[in-house]
Amino acid sequence: MSGALLASNVLLWILVLVMGGVILALVRQIGVLYERVAPAGALVVGSGPKAGEEAPVFTVSDLANREQRVGGTRPDNLSTLLFFLSPTCPVCKTLLPVLKSVARNEGRWLNVILASDGARKEHEAFVSEYRLQQFPYLLSSELGLGYRVGRLPHAVLIDSEGVIRSTGLVNSREHLESLFEADELGVATLQEYMAAEQSKEEEVA
Image 1 (cartoon, helix red, strand yellow):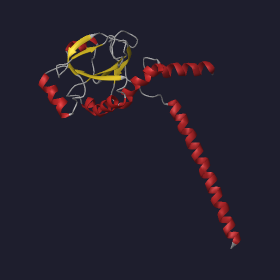
Image 2 (spheres, helix red, strand yellow):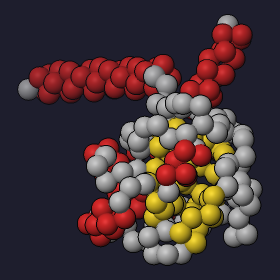
Image 3 (spheres, one colour):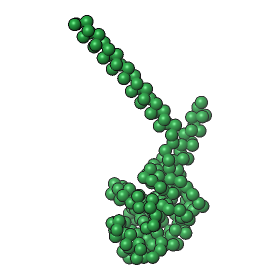
Image 4 (cartoon, helix red, strand yellow):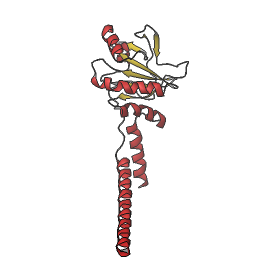
């Protein structure tokens, strides 16, 4: 009986060791895949103002008739996330909870401004339906033209000195957050950063 118990314990330990080896191999493989798959960043499209350039300056009244200045130096030292959207854009609507989360969590350094154009009543209904009263909401075709916005949703991150830090087409939370990551890394886009890192690895190899 004691022999059978000993054999079963040995088998159990062998199984534990085998499972441990399998788990370690899986963890290593996940790490390799993570290194190979580059994070998706916001897509830079069109010929509008680019990262590193001065942002076009506009002064526009929002839907609440408050004057809002976009671009230029901000006296409150806040950066600005200028988010272009439309009430008829399905992807824009899916990102509204993300924008609310960003405004809530990053409010100490970031001011979020929504921008669009078209009939005022349509946008007022949109703001009411999706409870966007917390955001300055600008209606200005000149603003979209100034930033060369061709496709939506489009976002521009502008620092407190009025310099564009990152910009691009944002179709997901990951794209939107990539604007902040690119700013922290000091690059225009995450694609640029990954390309530079890959180039360094090739040089070392």
